[in-house]
Image (tube, rainbow, N blue to C red; front, top):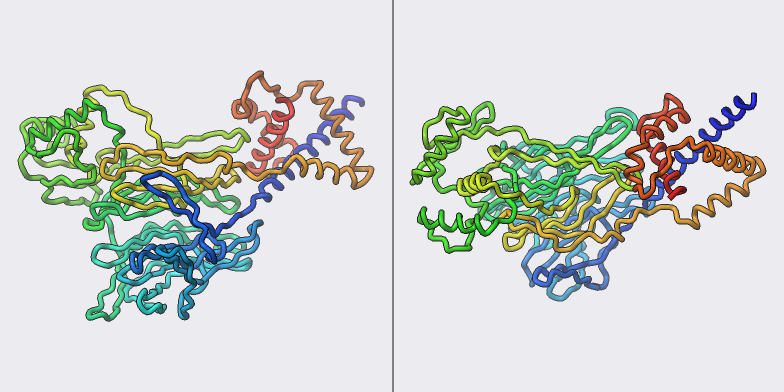
Length: 586
């Protein structure tokens, strides 16, 4: 009878422990707070330094707005829309105001013009021929949400809004797409995200991968806008949202990062990316952006020698641009199965022809000399899982396309890779930005700059403040300009004083609670004496401890929460229990 009573008491205590852990985890996740800003910073490329500019009367604090820089009147920064969220994230307000920062005088001015877009966030805005063009976005309230696919223009000369109605089939309503202008004055829209209600309290999200061209076909100053759908070729980006886009050299745009949300009725998990894709606006073609790594002196000497042999006229130490297309390309034919036939003409050295013929024979291509067949193979997906100190697991997915699928890479580069592998050179571990979404990107003097963004680990959302750059001509390596400040990444958790306050509040509610607390402490002491839980090894980090004992804690959590509890909740409580024990013993 004594043993049975003790066992029942122990189970009861374990149930309380599981319930407390679940409550603590729930409370911790609810303590996430949102902070919005209205400050302004300038980054000096030469000095590699940030400077905060204290400009009076700025726009109200906001996020998810759009900003565009134009050169007129000494330089102007135009800002439209965005949203305000309360610290607890329960209240939203969408702006529809328009502001301009005069860069020459460092002054803000609100432009009050009627007829503009409704309040929204997640929209996109570009400057096109002395006009601001706004597309899409969404508006969300506590009761409902709506996505837009309307188009507005703002005339930078007359300061007037106009809603346009382009002909043709428009993109479906969406937010978070990317817009870029073409040299001919058109506007390309790619991707985006939207969601629809499939049943009560259940939404289904969609990641769009289509592409459209918005073009003004009017003549003699008259507007006549038209939509047309674009069918691009090459290796397209995998489905995602929250990616960043900037206009690079050689009439190409560069897409970086993003997130793909895997949704079901109960949960939402995101796979974050840090890869690059290039889109050639002239050829309407996508290709992946793969870094070659820093070059050794031996490779540089080989390249200089080869340039002299082929009459390139290049000086030693001067590298050919990595994004330059081969000049001997005559025609590219895309087959129904995705195979690209590249027909090339022009002078080739005997050494190059022998290498190409030999490679074709080894791969069984059976092609004639001078004809290359490139199969657009599926991208290879590398999955990494990192367990944090608090038990949360971050899944990093990186998509790497095979070399044969990388359009826009010259013969000179592919041969250099072959020779590098023949030389048996050791690969150098390259630094790169961590996977993220909603980063800010821009291109200056052929260099891509990537600032900040966000990523999630379990229920935790991290905001980044690091800065990276990569030379789009060389495509050799990422450079860390500003490292992430770990102090800004601390998750908002309960402080010791709050914890003691909670405990004191619980103890003040009545005698029954005091008895429960005494029972809990008695049971915990009994459990400690019997060494039921796996002990922490000397010097063992929490991640190692969790990896070694997680299955045990999952069983304990499952036994206490019952068979009907959801697996994700069981695992969450299990990790919280393990964390509590670890912190108590270390």
